[in-house]
Image (cartoon, rainbow, N blue to C red; front, side, top):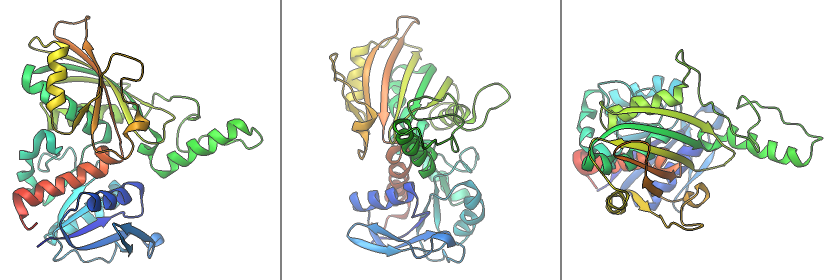
Length: 340
């Protein structure tokens, strides 16, 4: 016996990826509904070897459905997630709307799966920001061993994190570089993204940080440990898919890089690729379509006591969004609903 599953926002990048991953991982689905806004009504999407037509999110009745994976953005989530939850359907939300609500668990299954039991307060579970998700997968096993005091992270985030508009802008601007007759001014981003990097993701806050940087701090504290001090600089780079992060970690206890490698090699969700030679590391293009969070360039940080530096890469549409949501669904099924 399987589950009755809803995917809301099924025509977007993340929604389509959710459907792909549900099929790839053979999630026990008895019945599936794919929802979209009225402008996308009737659009066909793939689920394994099936082709499904989208239904109207606005009129859909969630009664009798077990779980709904939401990938519709905060505004639509604010309207429809409470309706689904009130109808008895557990919402797994990919937007930022509920991440900081103390009554809603924010889950990365490799890190804090036990917190999922808090879903019952509002029948909603939040999926973290893409840049946070891969980072805490890397931090968790090291934190368990030596207790993290402080993290400095610089991210190199692909344009798919800004949705289809971001990917289209990079593509059009790249073509325009070679054909200057057709100028493509910035629309989705504040400056040209082709052949450039932009140290600005989301809105600026009063302290000079951006909201993306604030998210990484707040979410890491909620998911992993509120005592961890963290500073982030988030940068958009001209890569279509795959987020990269350079992470400097200061521990309370000594930890050498060889032991850190050994810990990471055995940790769930991580693939260690770390040869100290040209090409002995993972780049974002190699992470596309993969489940793992890849770790490379593990080494001692000589500027602080008990410091380690590493490079972390993941497919942001997968671990940063769709895969993590499906893993939450699997955890919910295994620990709570227990049908599959």
